[in-house]
Image 1: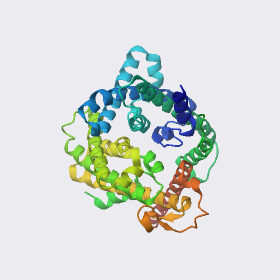
Image 2: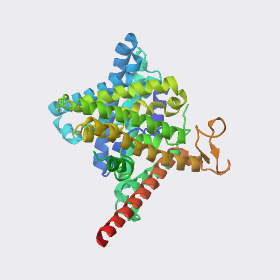
Image 3: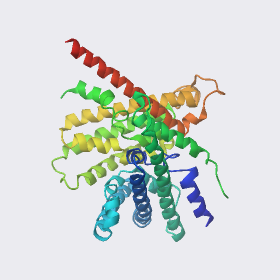
Image 4: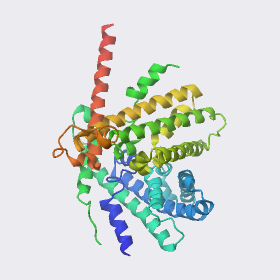
Length: 199
Length: 215
């Protein structure tokens, strides 16, 4: 239990995926102009990250490791993620059309979100990819927690950005530069969590 | 093909980082020393050029519906090659860039150029485009690296120059602001660099307008 709580705290606060580790900056910058869309993107990413962690764990443990194909990790993981996103999209379209409408536009973008590939590679590096139910659970939790961290950061950022848009920065700071500086200040706030450990 | 125009586009007017805003993750994450910046820039340039050439050569063979999947597979192949080569020959770089080398697969620059350029143009033009965009990316990375390293650790050329690769010390040890090499600094410095490049572009546009007006 402690391990799971530790993973959650790290992924949400002290090792936040976006603001500390810089995974998934593209959607963080691109889809954060409104709180609603940011929340939608966050939910979609969390969902896909948890699924991808599970699927890639299975691919690594049952296919790559027995065949000694460790060097194929990057290629196979990205293919798993790309097809997973496609499957999720088709599934939602058919069975949960309401959710599909809400998340539809974000789903194709998720394939190239480095948070998803990033969390899977980190899982592999952390040694979660072992044929063991507990390790499987840990990698799924890490995926979901990373997604929640992403959601937290992007929603916070979107709500700040909605207000910053109304301000008048100097000409050359308009648009992206001021958004980056906003993100910098948010990251500064998250630095306060570094070193946070409960156990 | 207009090589000079492509070069200027890659370097300045359509710079992948400062104008197209692609590949932000690596730009923010690894730009803490000159060594990292140059290494990452060269790795991306090589992968971008190779994938551009192969995708452009195969552009009439790949069916339109599955083109993205095909591009990603090709790119992932080259990334794996570069990853393994770095692990074997430059382990220090591989270690300090860490997971961001395999993450080049999802670097929007590579996929973006494949979709926007290589899938529509010939092999030679695509190769030139890959090299130019790669150089533009490297230059942007190096600028961010130099600023962050100077302000954050007070050195220049970390990993490359100085004794034991510690870099040449410019600001005395007790002064630099540690925060600049931490995540906060990445966002702030890149924000200021982008603002600077926007100001520069605007000035250039004004000048060329004035020239046209004078004619």
